Length: 176
Image 1 (cartoon, rainbow, N blue to C red):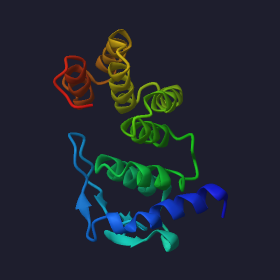
Image 2: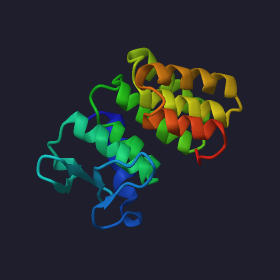
Image 3: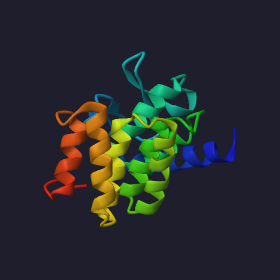
Image 4: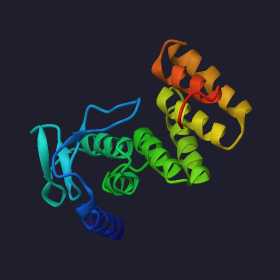
């Protein structure tokens, strides 16, 4: 077990008294369908229930999706700890969700660095471009946010959720 995994487990287990005891759906306008569990557990999509993280035999995709659910529920440190357990740290979704959690923790520049790595890995990933644009709004760089909005338009059009959400953030109608 490497040091990151040990640290991740320590953080997750240390937060167990703060977590709900039953699964709850993640909140937010990009709601995840993956329930969140109490700290020290992970939602196993195959069995449809929360299982102890230490003995869980869940896929990296499952862990990545669960980390996003934790982040959407405001459990950013736990989300980062869960992402630490994923084998491929260069997966675009892992990088995006790491960026999202760090940005929500107030570390916007760090979040942007993860978003840019995700964009480099998958330039057609609209969700990361939305979040990168929102980070640029936070930084006051509306020109860069508009560039991301234009790119999202080419990926999925003006009707997709990512376009609508970033457009709202740019125009000040969304909590980013």
